[in-house]
Length: 218
Image (cartoon, rainbow, N blue to C red):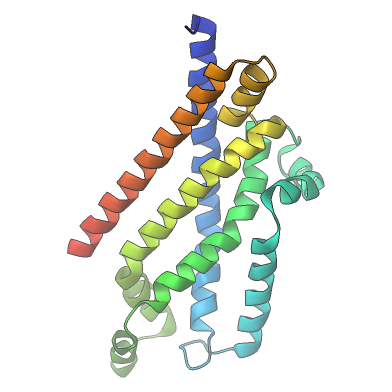
C-alpha cells in the first residue's frame, strides 16, 4: 500500500513526464517539419530541386538519428547548460529530448509527404501555383493524416526517452522509478511507474489514431 507522499510523488512525476514530452514534441515539430519538407521538395525533379542541399541535409539527419539517446544526452550537456542554465532536472531534459526527436520527425515528415500523389502536385503546377502554395495548400493538407500519425509516433518514442532521461536526473517517472523503486528495493513502485507509462503510451496512440481517422474521412 502506498502512503500519501508516494501518491503525491507519482502524480508529480507523471506531470513532469507529460511536460517534458509535450514541450519536446512541439519544439521538435517546429524544426523537424520544415526539414522534412526541404528533404522532399529538394529531391531531383521536385518543385525546389537541389540535389546537393538534399544530400547534405539527408546526411546530417542520418547522423543525428544514429546517435543513441543516452550518449546524445551526455554529449550535449554543455549545450544544455547554455540553453537552460543547468543539465539536471525536467527542463534540462527537454533539450536532449528535442534534439533527439528533430531528425526522427524530419524523416517521418518526409515519408508522409512522399505518399502524396504526384499528379496532385503536377495539377497545382499546371495552374500556376508557387512552390510555397504547393507546400502549404497541397502537400501538407494531403499528407495531414500521416503527419498526425507521425506526431503520435514521436510522442510515444519520447515517453520512453523521457524515462531514460529521468534515470540520470531528468525528473519524471524514470527518476521516480530509480530513486524510490530501484534504490529502495520497492518493486511495487517500479511496477506502478511501468503501468503508468504503458497507459500514457496507449492513450497517446489511441488519440493519434482517432485524429488521423477523422482527418482521413474529411
